Image (cartoon, rainbow over all chains, first blue to last red; front, side):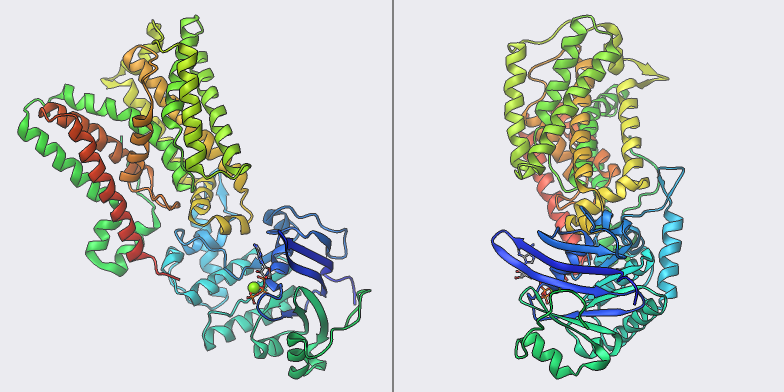
Length: 255
Length: 336
Ligand SMILES: Nc1ncnc2c1ncn2[C@@H]1O[C@H](COP(=O)(O)OP(=O)(O)OP(=O)(O)O)[C@@H](O)[C@H]1O
Ligand SMILES: [Mg+2]
């Protein structure tokens, strides 16, 4: 297997005196879905936000495509490094419509400075159509959407960015059965198109049916990474709860 | 001075479909506002035949220019999630620094630019205090207001700056094809701000910043740059208003700005339907808000109602406007 699309090594993060991450490491590969699971507060979202450029790691390395350690100072930097994110809190602006939200950060322009609203709306509608999701007119303010619809918009936005690395933080938390299946399909397609997908989820069924590998975080540490094909639910649950002792691996190549 | 193009407040176009006629009216705060303007106008007209005279209407419009120019920058800032209480003192700074240079014989275009530059510098200071020192905008800019008011007074020794060259006074007192120059300035500023807000990436980013700052950060917007631009722009329009006012009255007055000027700008913004919560509102509403303020000034004078009633009326309208804003938000946005 070649260089991982995304590699984290010994990542630590404090918020003031609170230690959110103690030692997080995992490798995510192109064409694979890499799940991250763990209890509430285990540090999953913090890990995602560090890779996404929202937070900065205090220690450790984040490497993209086997390159030099990245120095991301902002979410814009992360985008330039080929990373698209669906945040757990969705990061949508309620007073803007779906099309604006989907293009935020990369709004299309004409004549150099005029917002190209037509193109923006056309692109947004096309992405939603391609994903076969229904959230209504792209001019609907996100504030009017239900929680599930918002989640779909957030996923669609990340898909629209078409980056080689996709981070999805609980993309199905607010979704019904049908929408969850739909997002599952989207994830399968992303994998098929060669992207490295990092999927945070509490839904172990969802993880087992869509992920290739799973990394378990506990109290801000990576306690183990397994191939989904080789592991049973009990073992994953054991790692999550601490009933099973963490792996004693530090040099990197786990699983 | 209202801009004519079709408004693109997303709420305006979609709220109504869901919530019926009442909300439709509430949603377009400008509609309600225009009704209030008409009501005040009718009242004044019924009490005084002078009200509808061309001279009086022109006076109302010219008076509103000052409110409107200031309110444009203030509105952009509030839409972007900020607030500027220093506007009244920046107004005076713009007026005094420009007039001081004019008295020294500096050509007026240069003097105006220098006055605006001084104001922009104050805006940058506001930005630094708010973002680097983490002082909430209302406190930071209030601090700037007091410091700057002191400086304004110290530097001039409390006396007006006179006399101003005719060329400068023409900025406000001349006219083109019968339209007063100061009104033209307001139209130009209004069109510029409408365009910025509704038709550029910057405008959308400002709405995103004010609507949900965390989301703006997560989406890679350069929020510090936006903040800086907003505080500088707010200060620039406050300064410009002060300069135009000096040209109107033909003197740099130490008492020109002040608390009431700050409050008038913010009032025009809020009455105009810009939400203090950020993200929502537009230049059209602010224009009507500015005209309304000026109209109330005028109507009370014409109808011999004591000036104390001015603040009572404006206070009542302000509270109503903000209550309506809250109402329409509550009706239109689901709680998550
Ligand atoms: N901005 C912050 N400031 C202070 N502490 C924070 C911040 N963000 C996260 N934390 C802390 O870091 C720890 C990890 O939080 P994180 O959100 O990463 O957990 P999580 O695994 O995503 O949990 P959940 O399953 O509930 O989403 C928690 O103890 C949390 O309180
Ligand atoms: Mg989380």
